[in-house]
Image (tube, rainbow, N blue to C red; front, side, top):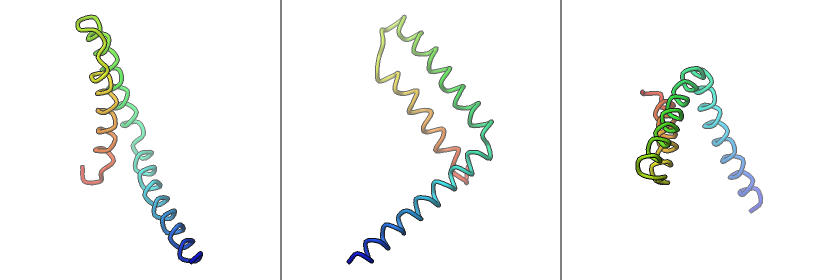
Length: 82
């Protein structure tokens, strides 16, 4: 029983390491582009939050949309088909 658990944990660790190393390599190969893209998203979101606060008051849902947009861009740009 211990050997099956050990084999399963080693397999899961190997798979996670492979996937994370792949995304790390993919991201670091285009680090300048990712940095520029994420910087634009965050700066746009920051000024959008300021403008929205002046006009409508602070809205948490719209502020969190900045993080959602950044995460979606990171995921889409890491996909090898895009």
